[in-house]
Amino acid sequence: MTIAVTKVRVEDKLYQNRYLVDSGRPHIIVRPHDKPSANLLALTYVCPAKCYELNDKGQVEITADGCMECGTCRILCEKGGDIEWNYPRGGFGVLFKFG
Amino acid sequence: MIEQFDAIVVGAGMSGNAAAYTLASQGLKVLQLERGEYPGSKNVQGAIMYANMLEKIIPDFRDDAPLERHLVEQRLWVMDDTSHTGIHYRSDDFNEAKPNRYTIIRAQFDKWFSRKVREAGATVLCETTATELVRDGNGKVIGVRTDRAGGVVFANVVVLAEGVSGLLGTRAGLREMPKPETVALAVKEMHFLPEEVIGQRFGVKGDEGCVIEAVGTISRSMAGLGFLYTNKESISLGIGCLVSDFAATMESPSALLDAMKNHPSIRPLIAGSEVKEYAAHLIPEGGYKAIPQLFGDGWVIVGDAAQLNNAIHREGSNLAMTSGRVAAEAIIKVKSRNSPMTKANLALYKTMLDDSFVIKDLKKYKDMPALLHTNSSNFFDSYPRLMSHAAQNFMRVDGTPKIEKEKNTTAAFINARSRWGLVSDAVRLALAWR
Ligand SMILES: Cc1cc2nc3c(=O)[nH]c(=O)nc-3n(C[C@H](O)[C@H](O)[C@H](O)COP(=O)(O)OP(=O)(O)OC[C@H]3O[C@@H](n4cnc5c(N)ncnc54)[C@H](O)[C@@H]3O)c2cc1C
Ligand code: SF4
Image (tube, rainbow over all chains, first blue to last red; front, side, top):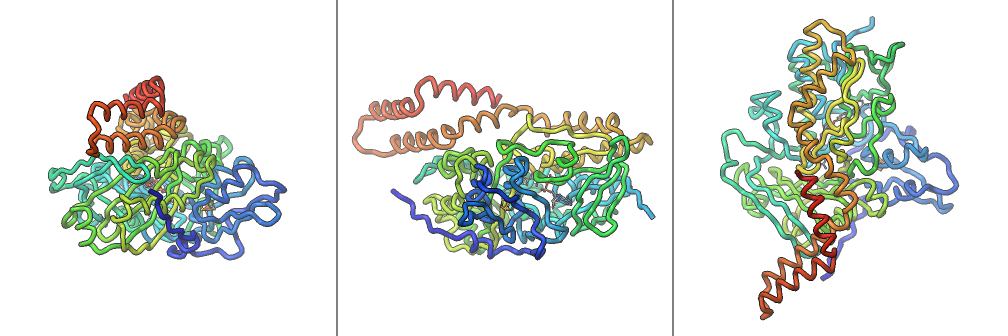
């Protein structure tokens, strides 16, 4: 038997969440690169908020507005220098109602 | 004027609140910093809370803590694509005057805990991110820089309760950043349903609760675990797998969660629910061997930041609360002797923690993380499928003689894993469990 998987877009999931976005001050930055490392590329799948995306030049870009601050990308990519990772300023970012 | 505190606690999660409460209630001058708008706004848990460890801090917590349900039933499931095989344990003994385990909702629980911390006399500053540890010429930690204007604050000791993704300790070189194979990424949703519906679906009444923990093909060969916990009017449902496995397989966590929700054993339990939140968080899973140096000149580290998490038993908040309390008690002892908060004196924290269930339990399972990590496809895929096959073969009545059925099952196991593979997995599992 195959299981019917209803596809829910991550954007729709994030829509339920509350955020206070610190406009113009992204807390995560992808360093300029020609070709993404394996881990950076993996983030386009593995980031639970789908913040990482490939652009048409094959480089990885981030839009961190829906970030849940889990730290997965930091664990995978900070050491290798692919990204710069910080917490949002105090009070900004995701605000879990339940957690 | 420069204000000097006895202690600064970074973080208002389980470990930070336990530490700040214990310190403040003994009269120490405590400053606690929390980056969230309110305590709990950044925190995610399943969440089962273990009463014993909170009782040691706030004995009468049941009077006003926001508790969801006390647990009377726990189900452990091994799943393949269409089935689950399970062990269920339910006992009326859990309906006791002071129940042992409760489900909680972290954002609400942390707010309550923080109120207790304030009542005990600590100063709690929310919306304040600690950005750096401040050290003197000898490297002793003497305070914390924050992102508030003019934001340096000083203390005799800093308690790092910054959680698994904490930046301060790693940036200051006090501990290493967790490795991808020592942390799991968990995603979780909150499914709302009327209280009576939850009661009917799980066979519980009043405040009774039921939890399900599941391994198997839901984690798609990765080392992982799914969970489903009943709250009063909601179900917490989630799944977590090692970050290293996610990176290697490029599985999408949200797709994994959706597939789990669609599993025929789970779907009917959440049918018709309204989802009100999607959350993600890391869980430390490195166990005993991943515990960093726990103390130094002017600092101690507690909770998830110190990898104090028992992944095998799904316990974390209780280790966090206990390590926070024990660190505070050690600090209180050092202060009461009028001794400075040096590395040598703060070693007392480690001595006291070694003597508690926290380190003893983690030591017991010290080889488990490596075993499950290196053998994940057997433990999380082949064996679950084989178990289902065996159970179905045993139960289905189709005219095949029983002796042939048994041979069939044995052959399936050997085909999948070879005699030697089965024996060696069993031996290694037994050794790691010992
Ligand atoms: C999905 C999931 C399910 C779980 N289920 C269970 C369960 O059922 N039972 C159980 O016992 N455990 C469970 N755990 C584990 C449990 O949640 C943790 O062990 C526990 O929360 C650890 O507490 P902590 O205080 O160490 O860290 P946290 O609770 O993470 O608290 C850290 C705090 O520090 C703050 N902070 C961090 N950095 C800074 C900074 N620089 N400045 C200011 N503030 C900062 C954060 O905002 C946060 O409030 C689960 C975890 C997850 C992710
Ligand atoms: S912290 Fe987590 S949610 Fe945020 S961008 Fe990184 S992986 Fe995605």
